[in-house]
Length: 224
Image (cartoon, rainbow, N blue to C red; front, top):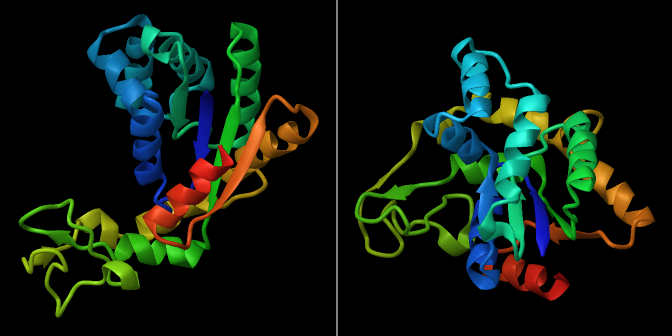
């Protein structure tokens, strides 16, 4: 089962990806981790990518996509994989699709978590971290996990915020890329959506990101 996963920051995509990883024993492959592995491993592609990164430039697709293909062809991906964080634009989607076909790698399922942009931003800015355990879920904008009297709803501990969660400009910049239906990340998702209408070997799944984690997981598993 080879899966491509789309969803805006704040949609719970990472949480659902982790659940799928555990449930179906699939490697959860994130594009940022692939760059780190290649650079730290001093691969030829990693060296090329590092030169661009050190200059503050974007790494070209003709370096990124071969890195991704190399990762998808490793032994732990023989029974399937879950790719997250790439493609980020329509052009990358087209190139990735072509590269997968050329390498003989099937794309079975594409998942898109649908969530209103304002809700997604509020979820990011509403996150609160418990000083006792960061895994205690607290969010001032989600009733089911809203802190109690300003304290952690699980243990009563003090809460803090992550600085990047409160950077509205940075959040908007990421969301501008994701929600762009012409050339951005949603455009790449829609490329695969349109492809699935013609190619019945690809299944395109949409999920409502508004409910809680358990509800989204239930919908996801029922559609797989």
